[in-house]
Length: 383
Ligand SMILES: Cc1ncc(COP(=O)(O)O)c(C=O)c1O
Image (cartoon, rainbow, N blue to C red; front, side, top):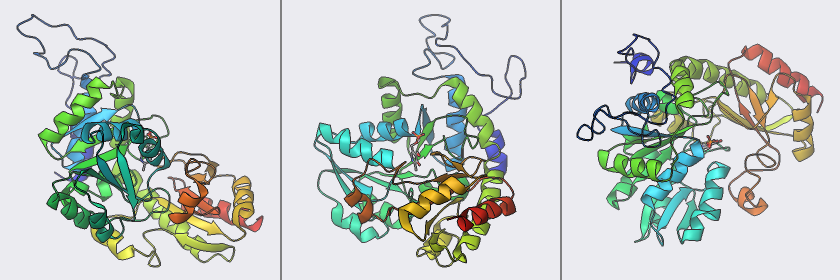
């Protein structure tokens, strides 16, 4: 079956009791058992360990990514937490992309490090750096591609190969491209992670996360942490996200086309120093973007001439674009990573990975491209 068919039908069957076409919201903590002998005969006991609405969502994400199974979480960060708790022992080591979502960096360096786990943040755009960073106690390779916010790409097949030869699982944060455009498991990765808060939901309505495992063995490790640490997604969120995913491909295609138009407009603008969008031929890793994904996504960034001050003026001048921290929604959002998403990194850490003071990140939405461009044009005129 094709992706569009799967995004609508996978994991979902009409309710056997009422025929409801939408999976009901099973807003129940507990599930009554027929007898001690038949314990869990219907598959559910207590919603921290599993819930039918959440299970439908987990099944859908697993099918879309082509994995064995999936677990869903209350936030994208709890999905990251679950992966690290499931796979990293005290005293172990993890290789991470040097550009990752700021919250991932914070959790690694300020929480996991307290348990003696060491992290090497390396430029995973060159797979040789991953190979050089591997140690005897390395237990996980964690990449994010395209990375938040600079959009640096990691060659997933090359890094997966290195991780596999060392017997170490490779997890990929696939939030920016979603399985519609990029399927890391097909390229050799072992786990895929999502902040479903972004494109999966797509409507700025929920916080959620998911991890898809390539094997049942990895899945059982994740399921154990999901239950033991109490991180499962709520039934209401699972239901809303189930509806959001049904239009994922349509939103991704439209938003990506808009992003291409916006990026092309910015590239020719005299007040813009540089523009970065994987779909532009000027994008340093354009060839890799074309090779490992079937679309370029709807995230872009640019550097306005005049540094921080100009960036701040620009963000005050936009009217249609919302100054807001989320991404992936139908509404177009504009962000200043240094003061917002990546504020917890030190200036030195940011500079080392190219998160400059004037970097402005765009999450291009579903509005008419000409309106988005007109708004940026009037705002740039006032900078
Ligand atoms: C790439 C990426 N991964 C993970 C997260 C964390 O997700 P959440 O905010 O749902 O906890 C984010 C949030 O912005 C993100 O951009």
